[in-house]
Length: 302
Image: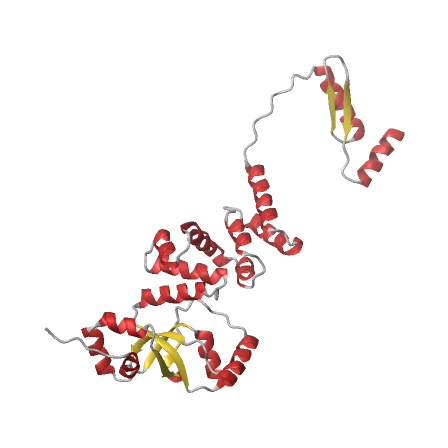
């Protein structure tokens, strides 16, 4: 039986610079390597660390990047980044792309890093989980990441919820936001923080009427509608879409219909007449604006 390779934490960091020994250690005792890598901080050349194309976070504020770079120049990088080892001279970022970019701006040659062994699915999961735990992602970036796990790796919403420690309904609500992929206004409203996740979730519940959804989105911005007010507006919309029960036909005597017709012809507007069995009733004459009111007054004077 082959003897398992024994090494210290500092030995793991040294092994990273020797491809042959590192691969041998992984083959002989992968669990020990992974355990040691979890705590070992390696100083990696900045030039060997590459961005992850599947990184959920896509937008970085230039001003805050310059501020971070200035802090790194003064104090160094306090929190190591996390990378995946591709080979002995290439590492892919799992988390910490912002720190890596700032390190480049600050002119650093090396960067402290935790090194992981992961396949592509684990890489995306690790990046997503770590970023969400630090609340680095906006709602749209979280939705994109959940969507990738569902589409590319065929993970169910339940499986995703178990991996990221969120409720299944939360995962489902985020993934529903992807219906806004073709709606730039709402999508960028989410990305730029103009509307909250609650607003976005409510808007995603509007099916088959993008025109109403767009109108309501604009109302949220213009009137600063709360999530509750938005949900109430949607409830009113759904209520108005329900088919109304047919009204019972009125048993209106013919002579009353004739009187209504005469009033309608006289005023040039439709009037409403109500009359009970005892002959008591009312006549309602409606107008939409001052112009119509003046026209009705002219008719009475004539």
